[in-house]
Length: 242
Ligand code: MG
Image (cartoon, rainbow, N blue to C red; front, side, top):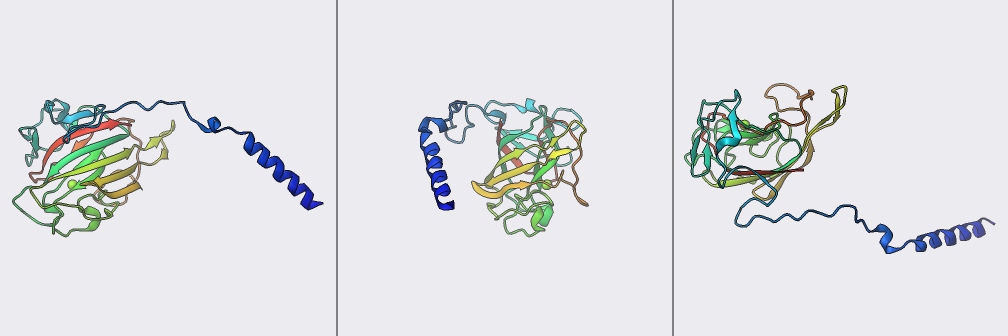
């Protein structure tokens, strides 16, 4: 009896399966927008260019809102020690960010004191920039680390004086109506085209001492570049809002 019931069920199931058509699983709900990739290192057609090409420094300011004091030369922006961090005038949330950076060719200092800068997503979540070429420091503080949270999967760093790239996919944290955390921030990072952070869940904002903890913040916040006293240079910074 059981066998007969099972056979009937199987037949019914396979009939339902075959009553479906290939078209039933075709999705026509969203036509992907056409984006033209950039040639020769140029940004893609839908990117917001923050530095490079004809972009001036008008996208950036110091933390206090003053005009930036870093060196600019032929589209290359270099930290001027002691002038402070700079950040974008606009705020962003979920982004794909491309940034090119260079540690000073002449080596000065060691550990955290050598070619240190950093790119902060939403002003708070730092991907470390450091000259990590034959330069030991704590591993969750070397180039490509999510500072004091995640060690990079590999050290993909180039020699000082060479241009390097980060391509970062950032998902902003979400907060509820009551300002409590609904979902944390995530980051994926490629360093010189090599995957070094694979969708890691951030523990909270970057802090130097202690354990990070999320605190409610606005939905969109600037991207910040760090003045850590070293003459790190930047060029070709663009992002795509996701
Ligand atoms: Mg730093």
